[in-house]
Length: 257
Length: 261
Image (tube, rainbow over all chains, first blue to last red; front, side):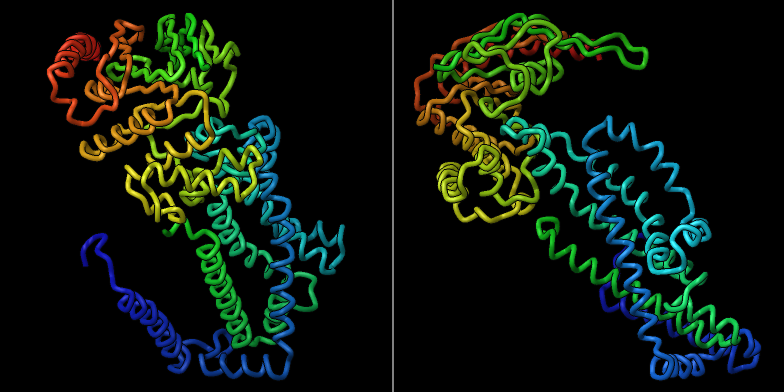
């Protein structure tokens, strides 16, 4: 090993898999070897059995579907509001000066701390879950989009002006397309965070979803189900991230050319 | 008829972080007539780019005014095409779309846009690269596209800010010939900023020499070399004589800059 020396893609895959082998091996050693009590940690085999049971007999796929819908719904809602607002803030400095202090403050409000308040306002229905995701994502996206748009290369803007572009043309044909790949990356990043908010929202006052299943399993001391639920969240997150990446690469071929 | 008039234009950059204000450009007068090819020659930091940016409307003069055909310049516009030293093609547009940017902004139909763009693509020798992204082009090809992009707008005057400054010597020489050929055929009014003496003589009908900071026009020299000019002209006695004269002019200015640094 030398600093910054690259690895081949085959090696990369092998190293990545090796981690999971080591992880499962340690887990098996701790559980099958009797070093950790069954009450606290199920062994890998039990976890798989519980998982199959969850999906085939307890309608876990419905829970997964509910959770995905909540994440996507809240996230899309946040993106629809945040991207245009961020664009305006990045483009027009007075708008930025007006909103930036509030957004910067609101960004640090933990979405989970709003759950009790949101239950008061919106009940324990779907709206409340969507709002948790929304609050958790919207301020982050606004601020990051504003920064990205504000950092648009000045020489490109000047070139567009000398080509006769209007102010509207600058926004539509320079600021937006030049920031679009970054905005897509921001959305990909924030979608990952949205996944952590949805589970918290489902832990409290919910009758469906992966988070709800996890709280139920805790009451029954079924650690196998809990671990299976956590793994499912990780896998879905990984999958959505992968899809988002592929979609971005397809959308912005000029970046990779 | 195009007449660009620069009247008593000066530029002072305001004081910053306790530093005194910087006088970048002394009050300057300059008149450029129809189909003139004027090169502005000066050492770095002489305010020549500042002057060009003021003409383009990208910077405001502290005093004085710029008029194009009698109308005062108050901001950038399509009547003054500009080519920058840095690569300013829009990376998300193909070569053809880059060249058609200004046309599209004016609402020209797509068929018409492509026709005009393709004509300019041929003129700058980029046939076959219409659908390439800027990233896939060499520096010289990018600047050729940038020139085509500015020309496609059919501006009254073409402003070039050291457009070949970042290119290697061989490419630079070829680009000079290409630009000159376009000018000889189409007759455009051109204002070209450079710090390269040979480039200033080879391209220009008139060379304006600027002094070191604060910038002002120090000398104006007519270049009476015949057109069309080929690269061979660079070794003729007339060319060499002009070059010697300009070397002296520039050298004293460069020394001043070096002493201040």
